[in-house]
Length: 501
Image (cartoon, rainbow, N blue to C red; front, side):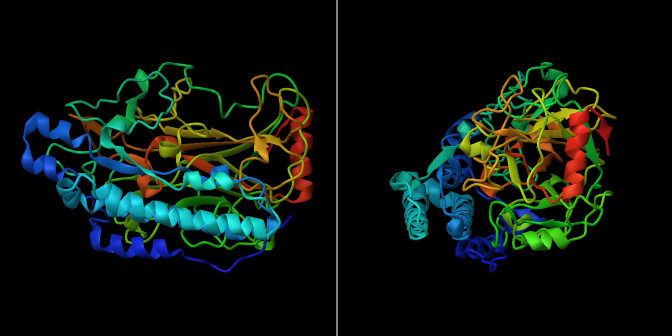
């Protein structure tokens, strides 16, 4: 069930976007100039903002990776690499979108003819290769994947992502601005140098209704019945400064496969080409040295003008992720049981992704992270960043899928081998209950200022460039690298109803 280290591959599109980004970097981040050029130059006042709303703000592409099933094991590496190249193509197209606003203003077909049309052709070529690789390895590729080649432009006034709003208000956005990120001067950024977050992405925690979060995903598996114990592992808050923009689960062997920077705790040998053997032999930041699991998530940044170590790098400032990286003040990592009975051991090297880094364009079907403030834990929101009162910490929590198919440590789309519990806490379709991973991150962050439809010094999760740093794109990743003795201890503790660490 292990994976081998693969040769590092850097998609051509990644190299292209890095070169283009280098031309646009200023003040530590990607500057999106002239987003509303025609509206700013040809109109005035309120009409300027209204006409700007029709312009394309970002690129919305079908997520091919989520539609792929039954990829033979020996084709997985190549398919993951092709999907990573596809992500880089979107990044490159978004870069072109953000730096050709004046040309777009003079030609209503510019985006379609120069950006979306060629992007569809490039995506079609990759889909063809994916189908060929699956078939060559003895699988049966879906003949309908070609239907996913085309992408759309999303106008500025449609940047709502279909998220869960938890009953909050509009977060202070006004003056006729529809979340497009423009300021009164017609610039195409949020006033802080990048295309998001915007004022509409924030909400005062007092305006969130208690107990209103949609619970389709991320249900806590623990409860009063079944296996009621817990196991807490202390792995620190990344004191070792382990950061990279790789993603070992989704894009193994691909440099900068995430296009945003990750925080890592636990395993200290986690990059795009770490093998299972590398993980097993690595050091760990966890106090219990039997836990060499890797726990990672996109960093939070404060867009305050700080020049971070990656200010000019792929995954960092060259792809619009700018500002001071904020480490959690506390990272609580906890495993809990099942309301319906005992849990069984997780297999070693089990891989789990929860949340969706592309939820802004994919929709909220896989969105899972929850945002709140300390002292207001009954008020949870998925598609807004909370504005917390002085002395209250920003809380970022997630409950992982805890039903396992009993066979696979991974799946072609990195999701099908795991499932969330049902409303009653049970696992469906023959899946087995394993300890549920719950991660709670607490941050000391000064509340951003939201005034007149603008946000100053906002904090934001790192994201793919076209996802515009929306909070709904938050996600977490986990690879189980506990030794057998420790995993058995975790299971026994949970099933006995004890709280251990």
